[in-house]
Length: 293
Image 1 (cartoon, rainbow, N blue to C red):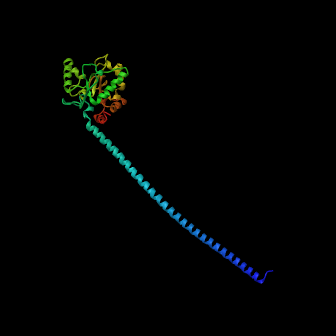
Image 2 (spheres, rainbow, N blue to C red):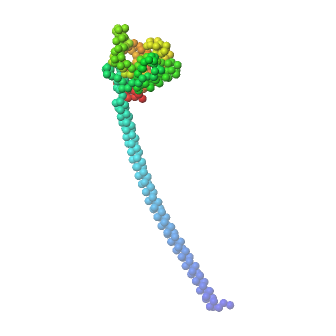
Image 3 (cartoon, helix red, strand yellow):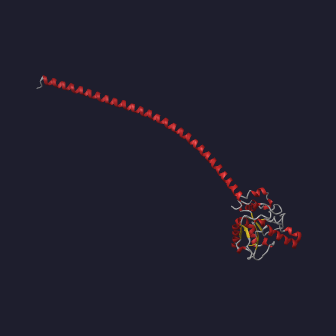
């Protein structure tokens, strides 16, 4: 049987338990509240930081855009400078070529321009004897033209139309001697087919007279021979042109006389069905820098 003291003690413990429960609940609520307050503060800070970061990011994007535009502008300038440098280099290269190329090589000499008795090509080379009509003679040609000529003669042979050199470089004196012999034989009629000394393309070292083993000489029959037909269709590929075609006002038709003027100019003349002496000298001079390209 419970005594009054026991009941009092139980009551005190009960009150203590309730008090402790209230205190515990209050502490938990306080802790939760503090946690919520801290979380809210953290969220506020995070939002503020995110806003700051967004502003910085937008600023960086704007700066990058400005830098990209500036870079594009500089690149454009550089491209312009590069183009100018390329143009300048090309011009310098052309001027260098012109300074190193004999300006006489593309002049018109048939009764137009004159080569004096002292003119000699800068360098002469002997044509391979297998391409010569007269095996006992050493025919010479401008050293830079030799490869073009021999390539043409080789390809003609491969095409079963072998060509032979009948005449090539002739000095001022050689031409004078030849013209004198023609005058003795033909009189003034020699002017129709032979140039006076100083007016012959042969003195340049870039002209050759061609024939075949069958014909053995300069003759109009060469024009309709397989070799002559092949030359008409292909000589321009090697830089050679027919100086005196039908109807020219300088000499009689000479289908055997071929002059080197460079692939570019020879191709232009072939494609446009024009002749060397039809062009103004100013236009011809524009091809001098590329004559050996």
